[in-house]
Length: 170
Image (cartoon, rainbow, N blue to C red; front, side, top):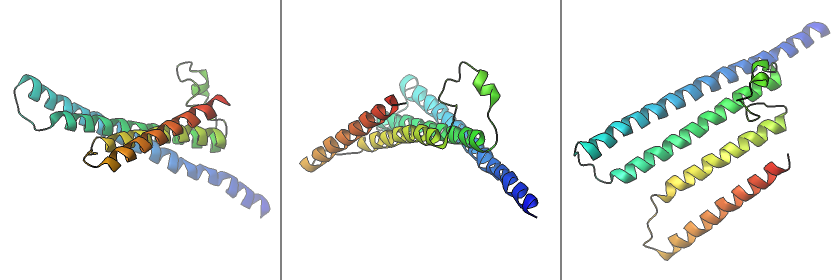
């Protein structure tokens, strides 16, 4: 009974493949969706700048779409790193990735702390991009808004500084 239970328990790690495959599907959907959105923005850009179509505040719309695409691409990268990390930690090492010189160390996960650090850095970038996207819609009709903006930029800078500093320890 003990052997059966231990074998069942050990083989239950394969359930993490559901998370791996779900993350890969989510990553592909985010990449495709963002790329298609950028394709639509390219068509609209050509229409506005070369065909004379009028779109009010096109520059703000364009920047907002580009920032959203960057945000989605970063989230897709988080899903990829998480999928590779979960696979390497629970299932098996990816030998193909170890032999590929182009992959670098970003996609090679050796421990749970390593996965956490890599995800934390990309999530920090997502938060910075989200902050930047929200800054586009800030109005400076109130002096307090300027103070909030300065405080937000300071906190983002502080987060980047500490994120960079923690990356040098490894």
